[in-house]
Each structure stands twice: as C-alpha cells, then as structure tokens.
Amino acid sequence: MDEKRYQDWLQGAYRRSTSRERARFVTSSGFDVAPVYGPWGVADGLDARLGLPGEYPFTRGVYPSMYRGRLWTMRQYAGFSTAAESNRRYRYLLEQGQTGLSVAFDLPTQIGYDSDEALAAGEVGKVGVAIDTLADIETLLDAVPLEKVSVSMTINATAAVLLAMVLAVARRQGVAWSALSGTIQNDILKEYIARGTYRFPPRPSLRLITDVFAFCAREVPKWNTISISGYHIREAGATAVQEVAFTLANAREYVRAAVAAGLAIDDFAPRVSFFFNSHNNFLEEVAKFRAARRLWARIMREEFGAADPRSWLLRFHTQTAGSTLTAQQPENNAVRVAIQAMAAVCGGTQSLHTNSRDEALGLPTEEAVLLALRTQQIVAHESGLADLADPLGGAWAVEAWTDRIEDEARALIERIEAMGGALTAIERGFPQREIHEAAYRTQRAIESGEQVVVGVNRFRAEHEAPIPVFRVDEQVEREQVDRLRAVRARRDAGAVDAALAALDAAARGDDNLVPPVLAAVEAYASIGEICRTLVAVFGEHRDAVTL
Image (tube, rainbow, N blue to C red; front, side, top):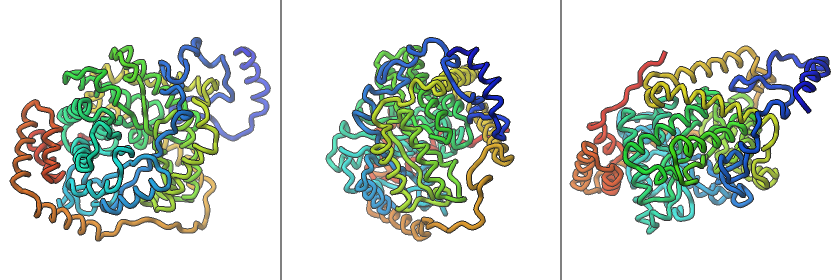
C-alpha cells in the first residue's frame, strides 16, 4: 500500500464514515493522531533503526532475551512513619513476591533536616520513612538480606549520606560491598526543575554526585550511582517529548561533570540508570521508552565516544503516573495503573512500581498496595507480554511515533545545548517555563472537557462509597524525636565532632566526600549534622522565581 491509496481512502471512505464528535485526536506531545498508520508514515531505513534486542541502538530492548531471560524487578515504592513500621511493610511485600525494595523518605530526610528541627515539624514520617541516623537504617533493613535484595532509594540532595548508611549496614551484616546491588536516585538537577527537595547549590551538588560515581566505581561496582529522573518532570506537567529531552539533557550534564572531574567515561557510565513515568496514552508511552533508549545509545557512542557497549545502554525503572490518579471514583485508578504497567513492559523497562488505587487520597493501605503488586504479577505471568521482546516493534504507529519523539527530543536537547547545557538552562528557568506552559495547556483541556478524565469531567457519580484511607499517627513524630535524642545521648560525642571536622576539611578541599561522610555516619552523626557541615562550606540553594 502506498501513500496515494491512503490519501484516497482518507478523503473518501474514512471522511464519509467519521461521526465521533471530536475536533482533533492528539497525544500529550501534541502529535496529530492519524486514523491509521502504514509504511508511508515511517522514514526509510527502519531496519537499521530497529536492529534486534540487545543490539545497538537498542530500540527493541537492552538485552537479547529481555523478559524471557529475567522478568523486570517488581519494586513497590514504600516508606512511612518509622523505620520499624516501614520494615514490616517491606518484609510483607517480599513475602508477597516483590523482588526489590524501593524506599520512600519523608521530606526532612530528603532535604537533610533532623526530625527535631523546627523546619521538620509536621512532616516527620508523613510522605516516607524518617531517617535521622544509622540506627534508623539498621532498623529499616533489619532481616533484609542485602546480598540478595536490591535496594532503591528515592533520595537526591542527601543521596551520599543514605548510600553511606546502607554501606555501613552491609558492613555490619558481613555483606561485601561488591555484592550489593541497588540504586540511589542522586539526580539533583531535576529537583531544581520540578520537585524542589534540594539543599545545596547546583555546582557543589554536582561535586557530590561525581564523588559518588568515583567511589562506587572502585568500591561498589554493582550499585547504580544515579537514576536520572524524568518521572518528576512528567508529574510536573511535561509532555512525553519534554520528559525525554529534559531527562537526557540532565544526563549529558552529569556525564560532562564526571569527565571534567577526571573520571573515564567507561568507568562510571555502565552504572548510570534512568527513571521514567508511564502515562495513560499507551502507544505514545511505548514509543517514548523506545525513542529514549535509541537516543541515549547514540549520544553515548557517537557524541561522548564511550567504547564499552554497557555505557550505551539506557536501563530504566518505571513508575506509573501518580498525577493521573483521581480522588473521584478511586477504583478506576486500578485500571489506569494496569494500562500504564503494560505500556512500561511493552516499552522494555528493567524495573517497575505500580501505584496503588488510593494514592490520590493518602499513603496506600496494605490491601491497595497488594493489588498494585498483583497487577504486575498478572501482567508478567498471564498477559503474554513478557513472552517476547518488543511486542509492538514494527507496528506502524509505534515506529512513526518513536521516530518523531526521538527527533523532537533531540531538537529540544540541542536548544538546551545552545544555552550552554542543562545547568545553565535551569539557572535561566528554561525547562521550568516549558513545563509550566505544558501543564497549563493540559489543565485547560481538562477544564474545557476536550481531554476526558473519567469520573472527573465525564461519567461522574452522584454518590461514592468511601474507601479506607491510611493515616500516619501524629505520635510518630514525638517517638522519632525521642529515638534521635537517645542516639545522641549514647554515642561518642568526641568521635562525632572529629568526623564532622574531617568532613568540613574535605569539603573545603578536593578529596572525595564519600569516605568522610561514611565515617560520620558510622560515628552516628545525624543527617542534619552532616548537612549543616556541608552547608557551612557550600551554602544553601534558594530558588529563583520563574515567570
């Protein structure tokens, strides 16, 4: 079939039969959706762009056998209240078939405040687990076999501190660091763009990140030292194209910073990983993952000159889209999550978190999180999607959109490069403005009814049965503060002071900061004490207003 026949059909039989009341069919990135796709819509050279799974440019997957060899890691994001409560949830999920931990921290921990500081009041244990000292991590990971279970931590400004805590626990468990597997998010640039849990200014923050790269390359070789996140960029309102472009632009900045710090690219790049959102438009999301994988392979091989094929791989974790969950008719969220999970699998994710149906209302209940885990298990074992690599490869719509997302993301990355790179673009507010404008367009489309959200602006119910909602007891904060003060009372104060003084000296010089952070952690210095020591050298970041 050629394009002339398609155009004749479009202007004839299709036009006569169209009756659905909708002016335009578009994706989140504003692509007009044709009624049908064919070879006329895909550029020449498709075979070279596709290749086979595990072969450059990895459009069809980073590993030859994909899920036939090993299923993705089922990693439910969880953490609340105290370390002991979160530990119980982790052990429950592992008993139910979860294959990796994903730790959520409360806001004070994420920014580097102790639970008894004034700025932490009202936030302790609310959106994640409260961690003040090594004693909390010891409780959090109690009876978790670190040599068998990978640990992922959504932590950025204080990533080096939490990594040091895990290393200290492994040492106490007798687990060699070389056997540890896991991930720290450690992606500070997206915090300035979309999320806001930063503490230090961008440039010293980049030093902390590259110090982690260098330390782990030597000491913790299986650890993913960064998970460059498009997830929060998408949650802030970005389109699929913007999610890919801003994420990979940030990744380029990290690679450049590491190379400038004297690291050989193939020493650290194989442990770089990514974190993406899976949204509602099924085919667009599949195309997005494929485009990101191909674009990163080309950037690393052709632009940075990485020689190790492992450096070309875009390995990524996926989380279903929290921003699509609705407080109205929350049972509908289980359907949304299932669709998003299937998109992630068809797109070739390496690990997956499925949101719980009640997360628009509060932290997930145990019943809701179990259903979310069962959703992954049904996709893995009953849908047939895990039986073949790249199940939608060769589908004309998917290939057309993969090409277009790659092209448009590359053009946006080039705009950022022309500004001087991601760090300069962030300082100028460029990605922030682009995301704000995209979010505004989406909200206008929802409010006008052009974009349908079931149960919100269409198909509403007059009466909805209430569902159980998880609440964190206010007593948690008082108990956490008591535990912190008990640790301070029994630790060796002289050892803490000496460790913090050594950290201060290292921060003022050029030494790698991970060893002195680890020494402070093992002396039971608190996260707040460690961060205040670094703030005294680096300063604190204050966000500029973006108009």
